[in-house]
Length: 235
Length: 235
Image (cartoon, rainbow over all chains, first blue to last red; front, side):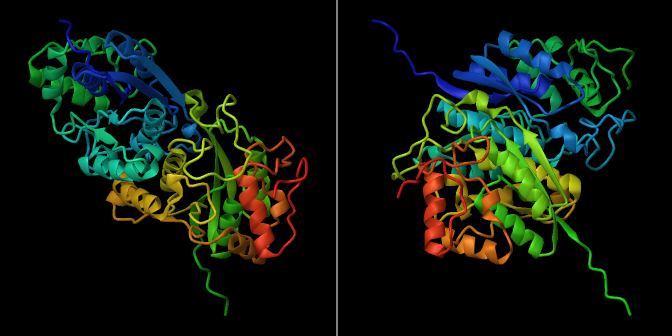
């Protein structure tokens, strides 16, 4: 008697190349989905994360990896897309920092939504986190829920009775929990790039908010930090 | 005594280059806003509409016109982005046609949202219409409302207490009413391109759904149709 063949459900996974989205890709794969990984080139200064995303898609078993280019950087307005605005390096301050990119997650989810519909996928995964994060409004659970509600009015699939789900599986985990989960799923965090001003080879500044949140996560998880730093990291 | 100087409120207006969005731009201008016009190059086969958008932004008094390029066409899935899928020419059929582009209005509104936040604009205008339309789900009022609700959770501006509004001023007008309104505001519809397979010079096929809806609108409005057709239009 042969084992029953379960249908593999396609899912779209937003993959930035950072620690969080790599963990999400591993979760999606472990959950039995066929992950289609999507990265967005929106003019971010940390280009190394896109190269990391391509590598991670391969090693973590994505069915395919696509990069959509959006020339959103022409509008400026963020330290991540406008070289004239410095990335803060003095520690995490209260409020929403200048690294906030207006409507970035709305844009990325819109692209994921379109691709999901073309693929016939009913599931989109995004690695937003509202615990150890920079205070970006579009990382909060209520934003994800509102996007899902909108998406279920936006598409032909929804009109035809299919229900799209936007999953944020690590939204309520702290960084140490995310790292522990990812390690249990075999994620090699040395291949991820979180730094907002990473070098072309992926080495990190150790000073920006993303570096600080990441480094603190490894410390609290009690595991060695595999990040390559350009100099001794802060803290 | 000098007249009081009223502050001019910036607004982002999605401008495809077609009849509907040109009318909306005229409405926004007449309403006293400073319109910032946004077109999206998503790989649509009817490139002439982008050229029309640039002209219309100028003649209708937009403050500026930007084109954002998104290489969404790589995914295919629509007759408007995939040359291997024919644009229907036999009349408007029931259901959502193959010219539907998955998540197109979600994507365009996401880009408008990001730009609005950078500009400090609280108002976005989109020329969707749910009367004389092709049945696209993302042209319905409930979609626009759901996007607005999501947008008000997505941005730094919203967190800081500003309220963003997504206006769809022609959503409940029929095509003849839209044309009559636009003419009263001085829109020269000869400069607009609606055809899904317009030639580079903007001349129309007269057969696709967009041509049929447009032509019927001029007939019902009782005004001459200024569209340049490649051959005698259907109907």
